[in-house]
Length: 422
Image (cartoon, rainbow, N blue to C red):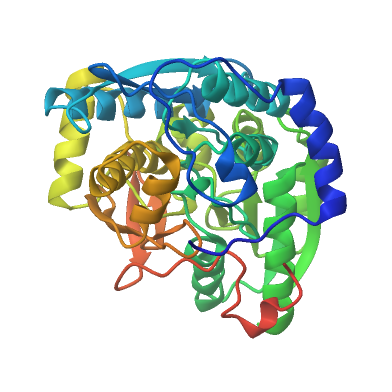
């Protein structure tokens, strides 16, 4: 059994109250799995029904609210992966029966829907979430219910869980490589702008620590509520800040308003290069190509990657959803997550959560982004960091990448300058 960080006893007390509110037990839904492990959360009885020709899995994404612009596309890629798996015979001979839920861009809703999927809908695993606020809200639910969450988005790190698989980049696979690239380009005075929640604030702590040890300076750090659309004041501060580059951790609709205001003030890639870590191909049309062409992003996947698996993925996605549709990093990670779960289930020979967990370490999948391998110690995956530039076709070209996938380091233990961050 792998070792994971556990909450201290005092931190668990409010969780007990939440657990009581949700309800601890649900009547049986068929054959039960997941009862043999000794860890307290792993003694929770599962209601997953393995007796029929189908197995339920949950897709939990924001189909409404400020994050819907990004998360609806993730649902599309999950649906495609499920259809492909079913067409190829399913998982352990069982067809996937999808139970969909709307997180509504609200952390509390995500937590409630997660509990419902596990305890009432009796799903074998859940795939979804986007913001770190949604993941943080779901984390105690999955640990309490002993469910499995496959989370598809890059995030701030400083976390692991026996009940979550982190398919997006850890900070050493996105934030740190992006900073290395910016330093190599001579950008020394950074302006930080982000949405006011967990991911941007923690990411910016990492950036501040990096800057102090790499002869760089953060000239300003600005936050807006998630979904905010008024950037007049921040754009003025940016223009007069003396910064030579921006590190952008805004999420959702706020990116549209920010870059429109940004461009209207004469800011562009030449006089104010910006690296964004939450803008992918899907968001570019909404922002407006004229407002963002030439700017930079940091991800592990782009639609333009010249990889056989990616060419097939893109062609199949366009065939299913339309030639005008694009693919993106979170979509690709979500698509791959379903296959990684399938491989773990088949290796375990069971849908039992504890057996799937024990079988997952070292499993690899030739994904559209390249080879992905689950690190059994922290439930993150090996990934290839990439910096891209937005082109005139509203796509993103890779302009820099590492030579091979990088081992995930969610707590940045391998970096002396990051000591104390976790």
